[in-house]
Length: 455
Image 1 (spheres, rainbow, N blue to C red):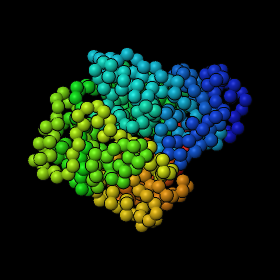
Image 2 (image 1 turned 30 degrees about the horizontal axis):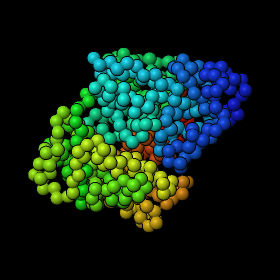
Image 3 (image 1 turned 90 degrees about the horizontal axis):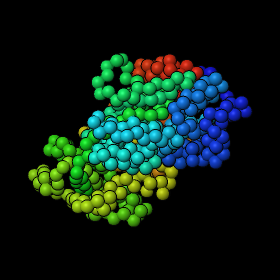
Image 4 (image 1 turned 90 degrees about the vertical axis):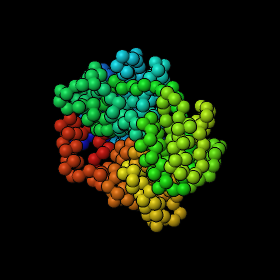
C-alpha cells in the first residue's frame, strides 16, 4: 500500500470546504470523534468532514484518492473495538448529516434511509405505520444505520429476525475512487450476480462508505410479554431457553446476565432487582395474544423451580429491561473495561463462561469479570476490569478461550483495530487472503479505514 500523507495540504483542505461548506470541515474539538465508547481506544484525526449527500461523499473520496489521504468512515461512534478512529493524518468522514428518511412502503414493508439515521428513528418511523424494524439494542438512540451495516450489528432480536445483514434489501455506497453504487429497488428476488449489499455489510468501512440503505420491516404485534427468571446457573439458563424455543415461535429475545452485573446496575442507576439469583434469564415474546398463562404453564411442566417476574405493564417491562441494558453503562462507572463480544455454540455457553472466569482469575485474581449477552445465539459480552488499557494479555487469554471452543472473536462490533491481531483465530489464512484480495481490488491505494480488520 502507498504511504499516506501525515500533513494535509491547504489545497486539499480548501477543496473539502468547497464540497461540504467550511463549518462542516472540523479541525478542533474532535474528542467526540476521536474516542470510542469504551474510552480505551483514542485516535487523532487530522480532520472530520461531515457531508450531507451521497454526491458530497463521492467528491470527498475522489479528493482523498487524488491526494492519497486515508479515510475512516464513522457513524454514531458507538463501537467498542477502535474500528472508527483515525490516526496518522487520516480524516474521519462522518455520516451524521446523512439523515434522510423516506416514506414507509407498507406494500413491500420497506423503508429507505440515510446512513446517519439513528436506529431509534427507523423504529419510530416503522411504528407509525404498524410495522417494526427488527434490529434493536441498548444503543438504539445513538447508533446509526450506516454504522450497524458496517459491523453487521445484531442485538437482542437476532434469534427471531436475524442480524442487520438480513434486513438489507437495497444499498447505496461510494467506493474509494468516488464511484457510486446505487441498488435500492428493494427486490426480494434478484439473482444477478454477487450480493454487493451483503459484501459491504460487515466490511467495517474497508471497502467504501455506505450512504443509504433500503431496509426490511416486519409486522408489529399487539402484545409484548416480558419475563425475568432467576436460575441456578448458566446451564439452567441454556436448558430453559432450549425448551422455550421449542414451545414458542414468537420469542424475540433471551438475555442472560448474572448477579454481580445486576448488583452493579442496581447500585449505579438505582434499579430494583425483583429477586436474588445466581443467573438471570430475561425473555421477551411478541404476539397478538397474552402469553403469560402459557409461559407459566410451560415453566410448571418443565419443573422450573426458580423465581419468576412477569411485566404486567410498560413501566414494569422497562424496569426489567434496564437490568440488562444498563450493564454496559454501569460497568463504565467503575473503570475502563477490556470488552469482548464473542460467540460460541449455545450448548457450550456454560463451560465457556466458567473457562473465561477461571482463566482471567488465574492470570490476576484482582481483575473483575462481568458477563452478559444473548443466550439463544451464543453471543456473550465479556468485560474485564483491572488491566490497563494497553495490557493485551487479557485479550490473549479471552480470545484463546474463544478459539478453543471454536467460536468467533467478534459477534457484533467487528474486528476493528483491537482484534485484528487475533483474526486468524476465527478465519483461516485462505479466508483472510481472499478478503485481502477483495480489499485490494476495490481499494488498491489502501485508503479506506487502513487500521481496521487486517494486520
